[in-house]
Length: 120
Image (cartoon, rainbow, N blue to C red; front, side, top):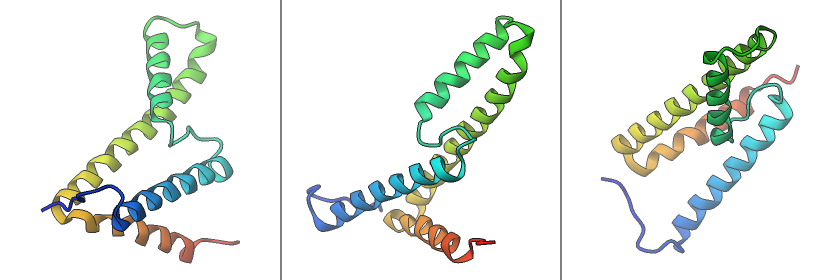
């Protein structure tokens, strides 16, 4: 069964919120520093809007000179949207199966990334 808090100002609830904020800050920093050539992973509304704009332009017969760039951008954005949706589905499934402890998985993955990173 899923855990809940009676009040949002309990220590466990506040620590969870702060961990989420820290995670978002790290994600934003990594995106800007290491993956600046890829679509942002933190702006799903912007990614979805861009995908719709490119899709409509391609379907409505955009000038041939623009279609190559649009197709490339649309492909990158669609991958971002697909992986975001997959991550949401996995998170929901893990929360359903094991409850609050599913938050341990991102911590383990993050720690493994730091330990196994390639400094070369």
